Image (cartoon, rainbow, N blue to C red):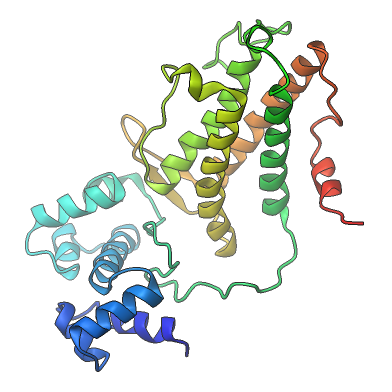
Length: 306
């Protein structure tokens, strides 16, 4: 057993008893100060914060998989009143415990850099070999192709980027007609940003009222990299747990809605694939040489090293 397992085990085993920082330190046979510093350095979270998060994750699990009363679940999570539990749960999951249960959400993990969650054990060791699967292919090719398009867009001037597309076909009802190449590329990035925020519990990114500097090809490329880190970070863990059917609450919707992880991933890949095809055509009409046709096999070919 390594230090991470040993230290996190102290917290994981304390969920059914009332424990403060001093009590956790005694379980580890260390002083409070020594335990706090060691735990924070190795586990990348304070012991009290980790315990509070795990209790809320357990509460979410009980809400989704048991018939225990909400008040009882709150007491099990060491909250002295239903009001206090509701406040903490809403802050963590975006909705009240009662609404979370009614919506049928089944994903119970909160953001944690250490990858340690209620009932999930310790995260898989880094560096283990694993063959590429369909998630790797579809997620990797979508990001790779979008980066290529944004790099090519850097060769265009503002007039070209803001010229109306010559193919005004209306396929997505919420996007309307009369798009420019800049708007099309921006929608590709926005799609990732919005769903990354929903998956990671972030806030809604700037939309159509964002400043012009937010929509240069270079700025969009930087935004894509940031969104990719969150979007693929969450879904890679879902893949590792084979939990594509699990559902989560998108608190950014008004009112909040429940989506499955698999459905969300398929949604992003499907609609951004359409936008990619249109963007390739638009670039070529503007005289830009674009290699390939946006096919996933082009991405796989790029991974082959000579």
